[in-house]
Image (cartoon, rainbow, N blue to C red):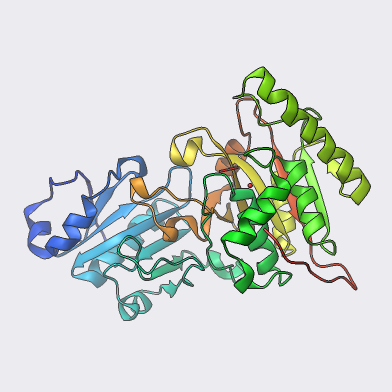
Length: 362
């Protein structure tokens, strides 16, 4: 990249005159319709000032997203790519509000598959594009299409369903709200899905799929926010899940899944459901399940079944999301007790079939 650029801090409504002249009113209206401040909004301007782009990104990640490029679009995108490379990022995404497929392709971006739950409404872009920097995307297998959880508590169910559909064990057309809630009902510790219960539900739903649970404590988890009487009966259910894991032959490893082990698993085209805290990425410490399905140098590629529309996020942010190794390691202790939990789902066993169904913590 030879382009230079200028970075201007973004403040809604306080746009430079040049931007007001080049950006259509509906574009500026959309930019200012939400509070993007949690995701570090900034304007990157091409050297001659004729092209500019609004960028945002989740904290603790290794990408930047072009919300729109205005003016001289090719020059604006070239400036963004220069900026992203100098920042050491691995990926640039581009929301398809105003971007054409032709402009995206000319700049080296590939189209993202539309989500299974694509709303076809004004609140979501009709397309999305991605460009990996420095050839880092070469090792990323064909990703799953995006599926957004339909409740605040079914993230575990969604990650398991998407993992199994991506592995060819579950049909994509079966991923819907009934499937999501059915698997959640089997896995839930009310309303969260803790690691052992989720692993047991996966084994019951897909008995041919190897499942392994990693949990660095033998006590009940994700209950620290509850009153004592509310903890007691959920702890009973968690002990029952451990007993069921023993009966079904689901190994429960009394340790965390190391980052190296996680990268090895996804390198074998296995899937890891990882329990994380949303404190770094979203600013609130809520336990949450994400699906790890790929790895690139320095980052793990995840799909997050939830995104924060109030901060201007869309499915383009949450899908094919690279998280640096150190960031992922730092966000994997979840809840006030800092539990580290993961569910590894291997490839289909010889002679096995697949089942059908729907489980999760936001």
